[in-house]
Image (tube, rainbow, N blue to C red; front, side, top):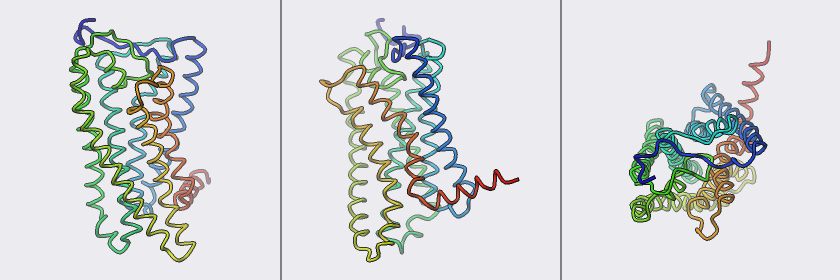
Length: 309
């Protein structure tokens, strides 16, 4: 194909080898998707229904669950449908929409995780100023800024990616439309047009990463100065889930987008893409609920009230 204007659809070639592998993929992704829907849905419902959880930390957690639901719902249902109906095709516009929405959700999630690290920093290092620095209006503005940054980032990358001439066919060795896979189809000279946006995105990523690291350095220094063991345990119980989510999100995302080309292979790319796109939205609710006793108690009360006659 000479250029992108002649492409009407892309072919998603992951899990194409055998019918048994396609069905295994369908049932595995169905279980993961239902777990993500259940976990994030319970967190959203619990926070929305309980007035005691209408605090900055839980407000940001609710936004995180919404972003997780959005990101996994953008890619997994289409992939399951392709495996179930033994097809590989996704339309050109459908692929563009998938790229935009997925990049929007994961970009906004990374910005939100940065905001959440600031929330934990203020709560532990500046508790007397918590109500002033993180009032309801400030929280809404920070969450809106995270969503808006994700939207702008996704718009720039999607517009640039799909403006490139694609000279190397329409087959993607992936189970969803992923920007690195689409760029492999572009002409070698046009590929450099993405370099500026990659540098910009990497700069934003690095600034957020440094902010998160510095926040947690200050947090751990403050926690270790708390005299009582109970106080240290309570402080750690509110920070460790967020730190675990950040570590999972950053480690899988960095390996997916910054791994050396020398170790790249279709099988490795597929495994890594599952790790950074499907695993975090499924595990985040579990990570947050495991050490958060207040969230578990509220959820238990809601479940008990629903099932009582």
